[in-house]
Amino acid sequence: MTAPPVIVWFRQDLRLADNPALLAAAKTGAVIPLFVLDDETPGRWKTGGAARWWLNESLAALSTDLEKRGSRLILRRGRAGEVIDDLTRENGAREIFWNRLYEPFHITRDTAIKASLESRSVKVTSFNASLLVEPWTIKTGADEPYKVFTPFWRAASGKIEDASPAAAPKTLRPPAVWPRSESLTEWRLKPASPNWARLFPDHWSPGEAGARKRLSDFLAHALDRYADGRDRPDQNNTSRLSPHLHWGEIGPRQVWHAARAAAEREPKLERHTAKFLAELGWREFSYHLLYHFPTLPERNFRPAFDSFPWDDNEAAFTAWTKGRTGYPLVDAGMRELWATGTMHNRVRMVAASFLVKHLLIPWQRGAAWFWDTLVDADLASNSASWQWVAGSGADAAPYFRIFNPVLQGEKFDPDGAYVRRWVTELRDCDNRTIHRPWDASNFASLSYENPIVEHNRARARALDAFAKLSGARA
Image (tube, rainbow, N blue to C red; front, side, top):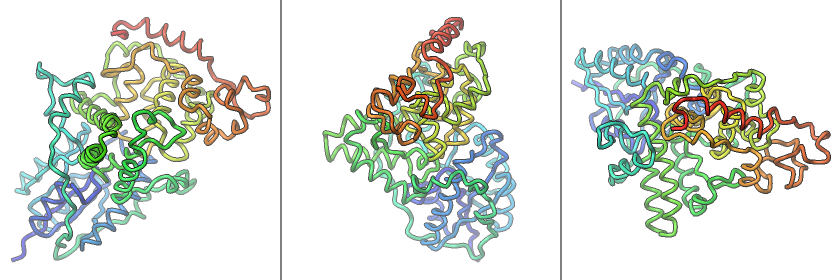
């Protein structure tokens, strides 16, 4: 009698190499790879528009990779618990493998699914494929979660496994009968009318192969400039791995080991590698915070901010989203975001700070906009980073740290190349006025907005608002 197949439930682990759930399943017999589009469980945090484009491309790539190994990807849409229950009954599957997720709604859902399956004698085995260290393994000496990054990363770094990432299985045994599958086309994950993502393919190559190439290119051509050049939006000094990491097309252990190996081959890269890996550490810290403080995406981590005097001006918010604030660096970042689904990290900080501190618009609105427009929208990183900028989060930026967008532009985009690329109205400005175009003699003819707020006045208003908060300065 033929043994029933096992199910591998792909989620945010869309790769074959170093995928512990897939590797374990492949050792048991016939495998049914499954992806469920569950838009109901996350509620307001269902996958945003830009990330849905990425998901479509990544699933297509995964499907092709599976077919090369004699398998295929089964697609089903609906509540994951119901979909999996139906699939196990259809095929008589007695075992399911998945890699863990850490968003609060996913934890609740997966716990319920596991209990339901095990009540029917269907075995569930889960693994860690998306973090270097799992959140519950890192505690302070007082047995509490860390709230400051540096000691967290020091503790976490000591727990990272040295084992090399595992290779992808060469073949996967198919089941006797393939179950029904939906198609990516009918899911309509890609925008159509209008196709606002039309330029995305010029900037990205979703999928496991694209992730590996992105990492190898970064290590070969940019790692040696990373520590000093990562803040320059006019230069290609960053890895741009975040969407690949979010969807699990490459795992953090693969990135960690590849970067460490590069530094061992060339000791001069050590300083740059340490800085780069600390960015992986911030991602880990963000998941640590989300796991231990599940209200992080909606509520202020520091309750003092619950009484902050926000000025939720709709016209100002719209100007910010459209890159029409009158501040070239902010506007360049917001336009880059709309055109490519990403924004340079330094500019993200400046643009986020401008929304929260210059305009006094709640950080939650900015986080929601990023959630829908970033291809690398990640609930943990997005929430922790917005709260950091706002000053309301763990290990937050000091309340008095209010970026001057003009000075930031002059420092990190000194020749104006980044601004000229995205704010084409200013392409003929000279370097002296590119970040302060209102000083140009021909400003009236540039078709560019006056600043919607004056920096010094906005800064004073923000500082006054912070000063009134009890505990905001802590």
